[in-house]
Amino acid sequence: MKLKSLEFFDYKSFPRFKISARDKNVLVGPNNAGKSTSLDALRIAFDVLRSARRRSSQLRSQDVHGVCATYFVPQSVVQLDLRYCVHNFKEVTAKIELTATNGNKFVIKLNPDADLECYLVSDTPAQKGSQYLKSQFPLDIVVVPTV
Image (cartoon, rainbow, N blue to C red):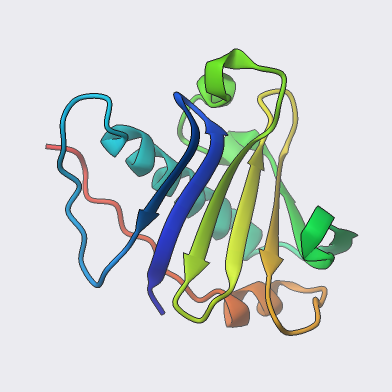
């Protein structure tokens, strides 16, 4: 399973940003193009997925996505400071959305004042239990350090 796209909303300096991924990806571009921001989003996703895969989910309604397997992850599992993750320090929730090549999405809601709420969007009916996330979103993220 591979990453198809990375998209974020109201995250850091971007109101909306999307990267379409290929088999192997190298991020290059001018300053303020979103390279470091994208890598930070992937680092957050790595930490959150690792923690969520060990938890049982709750079935919750997630706006237009309907009922989804939802996981609550403490901010302490993330190795980055989340105080500065919301776009222009607004009072909104930032979102990181990863889409896998199987079409499933893993969405992470970032609120600097609360646990991270994340959920899986899939064509299969949402289920409780940690095995559901592992089977529907078997994506392993590897982020090579910035040079």
